[in-house]
Image (tube, rainbow, N blue to C red; front, side, top):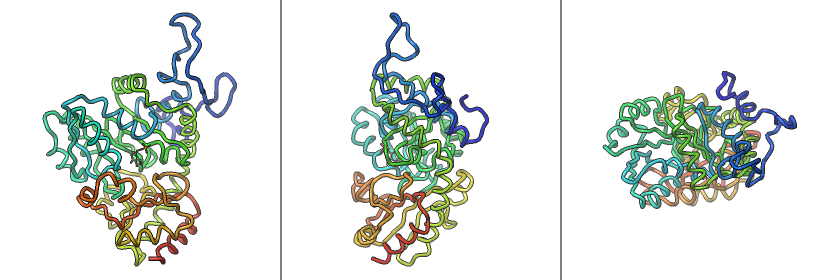
Length: 384
Ligand code: PLP
C-alpha cells in the first residue's frame, strides 16, 4: 500500500489507515498493551513487547512514511526525541553543520547535551548554500536544516544543499515541521531524512506530543528501530492514534491554514504598528521566489515586529481569540513570544546574533474564521 500512486489526501486518509481486518473498524484500533502472548517460545504474531513494536504505532509509521515519500518512518515521544534519535546515529568525533536559526530546543540539545558526548556542531546561515559547503569538515557526517526557520521564516534551497551533501557524502536531515509534507517534500528534493514534531500540524489539535523521523534507506530505518528498542523514547499507542486521526484532515486543514495565513500576513504588512513581517508568501520576503519553487503553499507561520517587549506584551494581553502560548500548528490560533519562549535558551547575545528581538511575535494562524482573527489582531495592535 505504501507510496501507491494516489493523491496526497487519499494517502493521508488510507495508507496505514486501512479498516481493521478483524472487525472492519474504520478507525485504526488503539492497542494499549505492553506485551503480547506468545504461542510457544519464539512463536508470535510479529509483536513481542510494545517498546519494540505496537500495531497502532506500526500503522502510524506506515502512514507518515507514505505521505512524506520515505521508505519508512519511526515515531518517538516528542519532536525533540526524534531529533535526539537522528543525532544518535552519529558517533563521538562526528561533526554536524546546522542552520543558525533553528527551533531553540534543537541547539539546546546539541550544545548542552550531545556535545558532552563528543559530537561537534557548527551553525551557519543555510540560506546561503556556499556557507554549508564552506562549513563542511573532514569529519562532517550530517547537515541539519530547518526551512522555513523558526521564527525568522528564512528559506534554504533544499535541492542545492542536497546536491552538495550528496557530492560530499554527508547526510542531509530536514526539520519539515512548519510546512508538513503537504506543502514541502524534502525527500523528493534530495534530503536523506526528515523529522517532524508531530505535536504541531500533523496532529493538528494541540492534544498530544510526538515526533517522527522519515527515512530513505533501509539501514536508517533499522538503526532507528533499534534506537526505539534500546533507548525507549517511543510514542504511546494513544498518542499514535491521535496523530493518525489528525493526519486524516491534514490536507484540508493546511489549505485553510495557508489561506488564513496569507490574509493575516498581508493585513500585518499593511498595519502601521507593525514594522516588519516575516512570511515567505509576501513578495518582499528575500526568498519569495525560492519559496514558490520549493513549496506548494506558504503555510500559516508568521513572525512580526511590534517594536519592543512592552508593545508585544500590550498587544498580547488584549487578544481574545489568538491565545498566547508555546507551540504551533493546531486548529486554534496561537501566538508566542520567541525571546522569552522558544528561543529563551539562546540567551540575549545568541538571539541578537541571528536577529530575534524582544518585540518579535510569532503567530501560528489557525483555521478559525479569518475575519475574527483579523479583528482580534486589530484590537490587539490598537493597544500599542
Ligand atoms: N522542531 C520545530 C520546528 C519545533 O517548532 C519544535 C517545537 O516547537 C520541535 C522541533 C520540538 O518538538 P516537540 O516540542 O514535539 O519536542
